[in-house]
Image 1: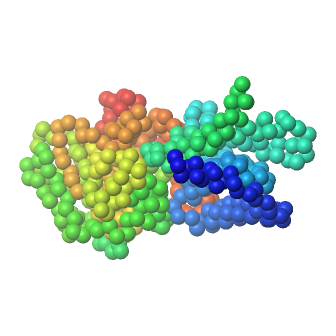
Image 2: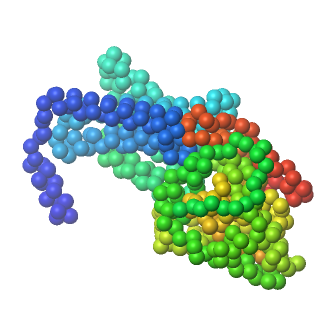
Image 3: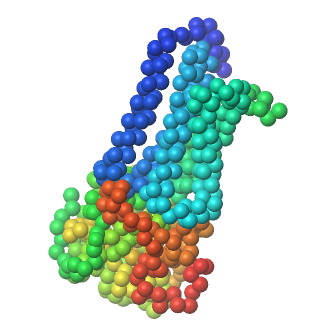
Length: 214
Length: 272
C-alpha cells in the first residue's frame, strides 16, 4: 500500500508530457504501416502456401487475435494518457480502432471466402445457429458501424452523439473475447486471459459507465 | 530424422494426396502444445527408440513389442486413407502399417474381451503439454482412447508406423499410432504404449473433457452436427496454398460404407 501511494505521489507530481504534432502524426503513420503491412504479408504468404500448416486456420487466428490486440491497445490509450498526463496519446486511439474493425472484417472475409467458400445458405445458418458465431457477428456489426462513423465528415456532423455511439466499443470488445473463448475446443486459458484483460480495462472506466447507465 | 521403410505399396488409383509437408506441419497433438503448429516445433527431439508397446488385459498371451518389432513382426502395407477431423477439415494420407487385427490375434483375445483401450506415452519431461494444464489444453494425461472389439478387429483399422514411405515424424504420432479412417481424427491415438483388452467401455479423453460434444463412437456422420459447427461438409486440405482447398460433402462413415454393418442396430444420433 505504501509503495502504491508513493507511486501515485510521484505520478501526481509528474509534469504533463507534450510532444510536437509531428511525432503524433508519425505515431499514427506507424500504426497505418504496421497494420497494413502485417496483414498483407500474411495474406500473401497464405496465397502462395508459405504459412505452416492450414492457411485458413492461420488467417482466422491471425486476424481474430489481431482484432483483439488492436481493441485492447485502443482501450489502453486513455488510462495511459491519464496516468502519464500525456493527453496527445488519445489522438492515436481512433486509428487503432479503425484497424481493429479492418482486421475483424478480414476475419469474416476469410470465414466466408475460404472456410465456407461462399456457401451462403450454410453461412447464414451457421451465423444464426452457432451462438459463438452469432456473438462474433454482433461484435463485428458494432465495429463496422464504428468504422463507418469514423469518417471525418460523418464524425463532424454527429457532434456529441459520436462519443456516445463509440462507447459501444466496450461491448464489442467483450463480445469479441467471448467469441474467442467459446470457439476453442479446450484450451480456455488464453481466451480467458483476453477476457480478463478487457474487463480490467473497462472497469477502469467505472465512473463513465455509471454515468451512461444512470 | 525419419527413415525409409519397406512395404507393400497401395494401388496408385487413390489420389490426389495431401502434400507431405502439410500433413506433417498441421497437427493436433496437445502433448506438444495446443496450436496446430506446436507439435512440429516441439516434438523434434522426442525419443521413439527404445519403445515398448504392451498388449495385455483379457488376452491369452500378453505381448510386448520393442522398437524393432514394430517394423518387423508384421508385414507392412500401405493404405491411403481419408482423414476427417472433427473440426470439419480433412486430408488424404498414405499410411504404412499393419492391421490391429493381426496384432490382437497374436495376443489371442479371451471370449470375455469386448473392448480395446489405448494409451499414449506419459512423459512430461519430453511432452510440454503434459507438464501443466495451461500448456496441455486442460487434458488429464495420458491421452486415452478406445474401440469396441469388433471395430478394432475390422480390416480397415490400422496400426501405423509410417507415412509417405517413411517412418512417422514425431508430430504425427511416432513410432506407432492408431488409424481408424471412418471415425473422427481424435480417435486415432498417437504414440501408443498400451493396448488393453477389457470387458467394459473404456474412458476416452475427449469424451471426458466435453461429453456433449464428443462421444465414445465418434463415427464420421454428416447428419449429426457438432454442437458448435455443421458436420455436413468439410474442407479438403491438399496443399499449403489458400486456393488448393476445396469444400466437399462429408460422407457417412467418411465414405467407408463397409463398416455400416457394425452399427446396424444402433441409433447413431444417441451413440455419436
